[in-house]
Length: 237
Ligand SMILES: Nc1ncnc2c1ncn2[C@@H]1O[C@H](COP(=O)(O)OP(=O)(O)OP(=O)(O)O)[C@@H](O)[C@H]1O
Image (cartoon, rainbow, N blue to C red; front, side):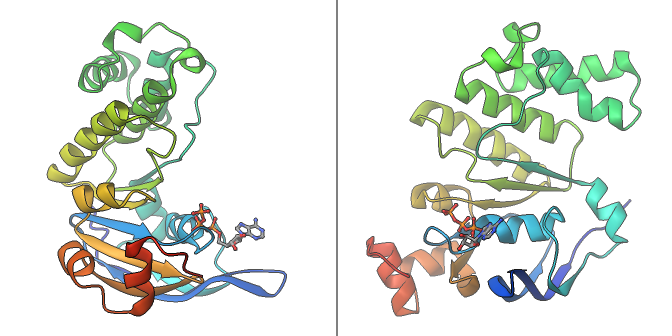
C-alpha cells in the first residue's frame, strides 16, 4: 500500500516578480488527523495549500512525500471555496474521478449512489449540478473529492460561503473522512470550525508559519503576541 507520510517541506517559497508571497516554510506532516491553516487575509493560506498540493509552482525549496511525488499526487484531492462543477448531472460529476482512474462504469455508478446517500443528494442524481444550491454543490464537491478515497484532502475555506446547516453537514462528512483515515489540511476563517475539526494549527502571518501547535495548546495558550491578538479579533498584519 502506498505510504505518503511523513511529508517534509523544506524551505518552500512562492515568489511573484521577485517578491516573496509565501515562505520560506519548513513543515513536516504525519499521516493522521487534521491540520488547520489560519491567519489574516493575505497571510498565504491558499498559496500554502496549493504549494503542498502541487498546483502552485515552488519558487524555492522542496516537498518530499514518503513515496514518489507523482504517486503522492494520485492520492490527493482539493476542495475549493467555490465548488468547481462539471456542467453535467450530479451522477456524472460523481463518477468522473472514478472513470478517470479506469473504474468500470457500473461500479462507478454504484459508488456514486452510495456517496450521494452519504451526503444527502440521492434524490438529485439526475439534476444538473450547476442548479444545486451552494451547500448542495459543496457537498457534491466533497463527495466527488472523497469518492476516489484520497489519502490527503486539501480544503480551502470550504464553508466560507455556506450557512450554519450546510456547514454542519460538511463538518460531519469531514469528521467521518478523518476518522476513516483521510488526512485533512484545511484553511478557515472560522475559529469555531478550526477547533471542531482541527488537531493541529498552523498560524500564518506574512507568508510564514508564525506559530504552530496542537489545537488545544494554540487556542488555550497562544504564545506570540500576534497569535494572541489574532484570537482576540484584533487586526494583525
Ligand atoms: N497570482 C498572484 N499574483 C500576485 N500575488 C498573489 C497572487 N496570488 C496571491 N497573491 C498574494 O500572495 C499573498 C498570499 O495570498 P493568499 O491568497 O495565499 O492568502 P490567504 O491567506 O489565502 O488570503 P485570504 O484569507 O484573503 O484568502 C497575498 O499578498 C496575495 O495578494
